[in-house]
Length: 617
Image 1 (cartoon, helix red, strand yellow):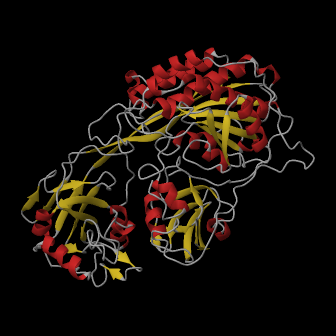
Image 2 (cartoon, rainbow, N blue to C red):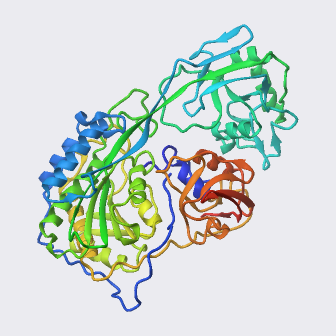
Image 3 (cartoon, helix red, strand yellow):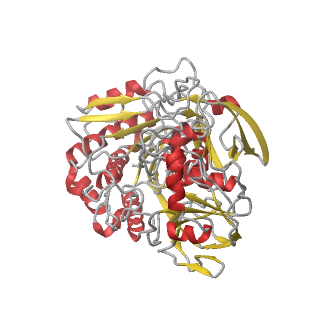
């Protein structure tokens, strides 16, 4: 499952509300399907025979293969992901499903799978040359290129209205190299005007580089007390500016004064000490190599070939490979993350449910697409690609059922989300869960950190099955021997009941848009509630300069401003937006109640729209 807090999903959370814990996932309906007649049934009866059962042993065998070391954690850069795709395509074919795509069971798309540093990484000034790995180290999100400019000291590189603090006041970094300190004033001082106990968003490298980029700097050097040797880092988008960490010694050589003393002076007075020392130009050369590869969604279809409408049953089959930025292992060593519960469990359960459904497919009124998504852990990439390139038009998709982390059923309790995404789903979900002897806990929202979200954003009702979080999440200890296979069989039976009912019902479920969030004005949003809220839903599957919206939440500031699905945000309140991280920073610089101007590109035209931010509670 895509990580919500602190790693993989800081970006999505920022698009919705800037104060949410850093981490990601997305979307509001681009266009809801046409309303159904008022006379239609108020419920969808579970029509599939409950005498059918799923094989716990077969579920076990599938998970033990998918979560074996041989498959290398099914990471996007591993051969194991390709083996998993080949296995799933073969199993779907053996289950009797037809190919879902014109050219077979696979749907390929490109994703960025790694970052390496090339040989052209250098820092020099005059006759002084600095050693990479000791004196300086590029960031993986740095732009590549060569630039020269006089080094300018910009303190902590922070501009904050709340703290009435501005390191950029009185200095000009245009065409120069901005040298900024790591952190923020008074990191360890509880009386700091910032926080002192924990760092605020102003301290992030992304926030600092955005200000340096907006000021016209040709590069930014972040002064750290120690610089670690450069290694292949986490997958990261180009930030639009060359950025590297440098040691205090290198900073002193560039600037001609002791930056450690300058840091101590700022921390004591809480007054900026920025200055241009008039030193010789620094030359910065950075080469970041971003690797891309083709990965695959795997899907088959059953039901009437001439049916126009369809139901989707899906799960993601990728995981973290050898760890990386989303790992919670605490180890810097590459360790295989087998991802048994996340999400070999959902993959195996969907496959087993598909076998059962295919055995009784003669009564289906709609097609059923069984889809295994890649790229979920990196931002719902596979499911976003699928809804952008669907095998049938999106307005013909009646519903989507998603399984993610369903391997640890406890006390027969199943969590089922999305029951308010269509008016009939609460009754259907309750009947399906209790009909299998389980106890349900139900949530209404169709948005969340998994692959149902892009579907709901496109006006498709969704249901999300989940058996709960646990201490092995995103750790190497998420292994096959920790799962409860009889429980997975029960969950799979519920999923099959739901899909059968949705695929056999005379009328499709009535889509319900998410209600607007609670909104309040005023306040800075720092440390309270969820901060400023905009309500756009980013399209994680589209690699563009800016932030493309897959939709906006109904009633949100974004919708009221006139933002629409397909818009590409390129500027937020005067700040250029090149990627989702920029948007995160720009939004955090605003407060609930602020009226901001956003610029979006729509159909080749740039539009300036006015939005009044609220607070999401």
